[in-house]
Image (cartoon, rainbow, N blue to C red):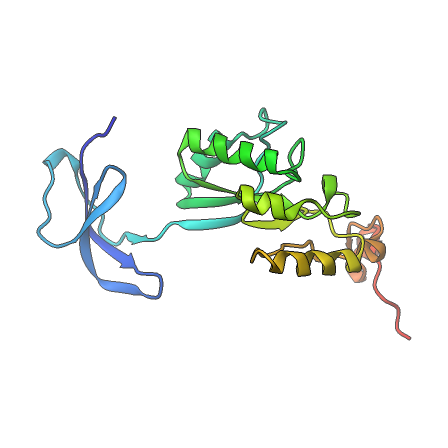
Length: 214
């Protein structure tokens, strides 16, 4: 149920390129900006003076960790979108490492359907690059793209094969979707927890190996 229009006075507006220095008023109706200017009016109880506050387009989170489907007790799409709204984010791209992983058009469609039911912010699914996020064979990226996946990646898991990653990049070009990849070589990293160097030695932590000087 709508509470009626809301007026924010003396707001500085960021238009995407620069901050407009002259404060102005912003009237919000039904959750969207209805007017920007001076001498705007609403009922007095919905009139707030926000001297020095900034207003601008909502943020986009490119790497949100949703746990739905599969582990909703940790984070579902309702709590995720609520947190996004509270932080000024109007859209989030959700990682594919759910249970099951988003490596199939059916999971992509499920995420979008559930997000539309909640309607708190735009939830944009990231499809998996590889089947079951194992980095071994490509997932059906074309089908997921048609279902609504906006990009592809394997979350925190690196691709095991540079050849497979190249195939994925070539394939994604056909339907104009970006690819996110975890920038680490699993063979070099091994079971390391910290970059190799003085601090790894001082702390006694297993290091991520570097290429030896030839």
